[in-house]
Amino acid sequence: MVGSGAAGLSAAVEAKEAGANVIVFEKMKVTGGNTRLSDGGLAGPGNFLQKSRGIEDSQQLFYEDMIKAGMGLNHPHLVKIVAQKASETIDWTIKNLGLEYKTRLDRFGGHCAARCITTKNHTGADITKAQTKKLDRIGVPIRTNCLMTRLITDSTGAVQGIQIKEGFKFGEAESGTIKNIKADHAVILASGGFGNDIRFRTLQNPVLDESIGSTNHRGATAEGLIAALKINAASVHLSCIQTGPWGCADETGYGRGASFASYSVYPFGILIDPATGSRIVNEWADRKQRCDAIFKTGHICIGIVDARGAEKAAFSLQSCLKSGKIKAFEKLSDIAMEYKMPPDKLESTVKAYNLMIKNKEQDEFGKLLQQDSAQLLEKSPFYTVRLWPKVHYTSGGLGINANAQVIDLDGQPIPGLFAAGEVCGGIHGASRLGSCALTECIVFGRIAGQQAVKKRLVVK
Image (cartoon, rainbow, N blue to C red; front, side, top):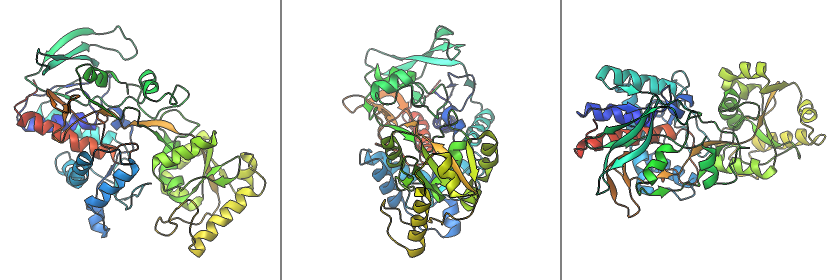
């Protein structure tokens, strides 16, 4: 097992419980990958919170939302698996891992229903901690500081094991001792995405150079993916690299400013181009549409929400006010002055927005002002955050089939090699919906673990 995020640890649990001997190898000194840094959100139609509140949803609607956000580039058979197994996967995290969730239920941009749930402490670390505890109970070791350098194959191309650098220290390329680890006969690759691999990501999309920040952990690099490509694995959508529209320009990585924008500004506020004082996009659109609108302006944009909307992200508000990531204003005119907006333009923009909501008018950007639970912007103080997209998720990666087997350039499974999580491509297409990554990671991580054993490809 290569990688210790949600996908790899889910695969390890399933493989061990199916009778395999399992070892998890992690290149960093701490486990968890991007999962550990995430908000801990999972999306699933028919999940337990939806049922308790009588919210109508379906696997088909979830499937359609993912396809629409992915601009039809998604591989339909993989999306269907995520849609079909999402709710039961959430149940599995509760029953098998003991994971606890908040009682809040969110609807994020691009979803047609409130189907997004969040772990108890609002962090993906809840998931990896629960998985790690489970693996400790059932006797699965996790070996950190072990970088996989290549996949070992036999004369037929079947994967026989991995080569690692034991004692590897990230950032010190020559560190570690080379060792070969034999697999009898399966390797599950869950090494994550490449959002912080500037060389590799600019090779795929030159626009996303070092000037664009990333929300990923520093070890989100492409070594695992490249190792599989070197043995003839198929690549899918490598240039589909998602940026997050809630990237806060006044912090590095994915921090509390971004969280405030995600849970407060976009659901309950507006996005403004400071050069014009006007809105630029449907704030409930999917991530790609919002990022594209910001990039089109060519500069940082301003997210604005009022006091009621800010309450929805109270968990990050106070700390962001102290650090200056969020600013508070009593009047809209003060915001316009702070960000050098055209005089009176912001006030007229907000007035027009409020009138559309009151009069149930149609929004020029297609925002469904009633169905989307848009609320009036009128209660001071008003809060602002400076927004500029950051690389968040690499939708492209290795091609896999429904059994999580890595496929080659002829579309055939590479014997002995499975993959799950962000190292894979094809599921999300051009753009991923919020709260779908962890769901997909656990869905296909479980499948990889189950199938590796079922096909008598047992990890040792």
